[in-house]
Image (cartoon, rainbow over all chains, first blue to last red; front, side, top):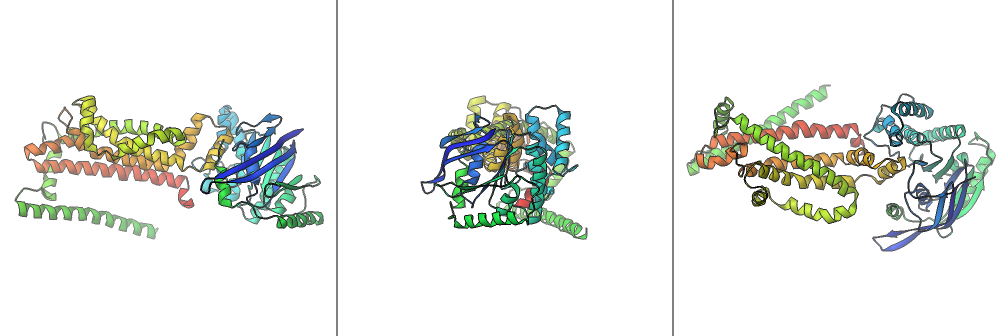
Amino acid sequence: MTAISYQQVSKAFVNHQQGSVVQALSNISLDIAENEFVCLLGPSGCGKSTLLNLLAGFLKPDTGTIDFFGQPISGPSPDRGVVFQEATLFPWFTAAKNIDLGLEAKKLPTAERQRIVEEILALVGLPGKGHHYPHELSGGMRQRVALARVLALGPRALLMDEPFSALDNNTRERLQDELLRIWSMDKKTVLFVTHNVEEAVYLADRIVVIGPSPESIRTEIKLDGTRPRSRTDESIRRTSEQLRQLLMDLPCCLAPALHQKGQNDEH
Amino acid sequence: MIKSSLRKHSELIYVFAAAFLVLILWFFVASVVTWLRDVPFPTPLSTLRRLFILLNGELLLEHSLYLHTFNSLLRWLIGFVIASFSGLIFGLVAGWWKPLARISMPTVHVLQMIPGLAWIPVALLLFGVGEASTVFMITMTAFAPVVINVVAGVRQIDETYIRAARMLGLNRYMFFSMVLLPGALPQILSGLRIGLGNGWRVLVAAEMIVGSGSGLGYAIIQSRWTLDFTSAFSCLVIICLIGLAVERLIFLPLERRTIEVWGLQREQ
């Protein structure tokens, strides 16, 4: 079944300082199947995050439609859990309370909420760490909590926006393994944005390479579904090499500052 | 350990030095004025002596110093509570919903510009002579800084927190109380602190028009007629000490605690 369907989606941002319009995405059509793990790969500023933010409901497309399990998207929803680049845990709440917030919003009974929080903390490898405030946790732990916060909601899809890009290599690889472990236990549709070739090749069922508009989708690579993969495997290395070559040929896109500005263009 | 105790020592030395500077300046001014103009400008010593007599229960303008202080505190508290509650709620909504801010903030900034004393005719016209007028003046001077700071506080909340809140499906009440309010808390605290200070400072002016004839501000104003300047200075000392105590013992620790608990210090 198709979980996510972009149809002819375009999105432009207005740069208010210069009065110019920057086309971030033009005429994108992309289908993602249920339980598929798709990586959006591309250089910074090509609209990868915009594509994700549109699906999250943070932004509205200028033209085209985005369907989620057949329903048009009308705004953010716990059904589409987002893990941001920075953990964006609320610093004034403990890790457990951060996870609990979404459950409280769902009006679940207190006992059940406590049970879920404990369970999810154990699932992401942080059993008994719920009483810590975010600033007491390392960057990797914070991203685990951010993932836990989303998993607790029982979403139908996970939207991950360069979630591990701020972490050191070692932590990043461990979190990739954790993510795959959790995902294989309870497969969800995943849209994972990254600019890291190895990450995409290690994680994805399918890699969609995004380039600058107007030719947004450059190519797609389907990987065989076996997991766990070896990071040093010959065929993995070949795919990485091929992708890296492809990225090298892509021109650099929007200036990051511009991109940021447009992101505030809310629903 | 040694380092922290050393630091505490030097902290204490600075506190004493600062207090000493105030007393020296005061003493100097008092001496010079007494010598030049031949008027009995109260010195720190004469004020302290008078303060002790008043604290011992001698009546000042028919009331004890305690009652004057209590009445002033009560008016201040009522005015401040009204201003902070309404300012907080209004500020949160205006900070979130931009059209409201666009329409209302110019008025709030105008309010901010009005000096405390200028509210006297307005208060008299609205409420006549009495308690309501006093409280009104305190409320008006405390309201604007609270609103301005709360709005600024909400505005600076990181966009991703707001996105996260929407993604988590928080309802409106949770969004305001668990995201906007704590997100803006550092600025809210400084707004409340400024509001509290403004209200306390306008107390003297506000009590000029109170009918009941009590309060520290009232006692100070009355010294014009009674020429009991040392008593007026005693009241002034009480006002300063209370203001200082609230700032140092309530607001500073509160601000420090928010910063610590949220780990904001690290990010800065």
